Length: 135
Image 1 (cartoon, helix red, strand yellow):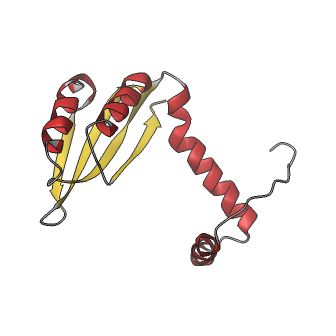
Image 2 (image 1 turned 90 degrees about the horizontal axis):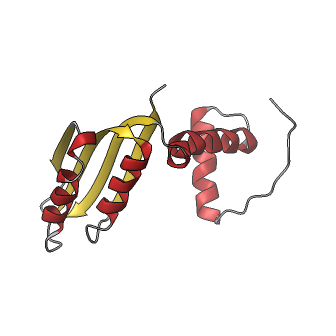
């Protein structure tokens, strides 16, 4: 490991309280250690975005099927990326809400474009992903 650099981070009070509870539950020794782990996780989860390498993972889209036309637009976006989508799963969360889980495998730039297209499909509640380089 290289030289240690000090930095300051500002948190909303409630966020910090929740963070501290999780640190304690995980048995992490300090906020610094927890923040370092969180930054490493952030880099791992997002480094694929700055390189065009082979990646695999899942994209999760939480949306309301009551949003006019959103299911059709999400399906259209997936159909445009069949070469990188080996599978998708539709989960009914409630009478209104659905979760779409899209498995992906392909070039990072193509996965990035799929994420962009899904975001443009309409009003979604949340879009998150876990994408990892295939090394």
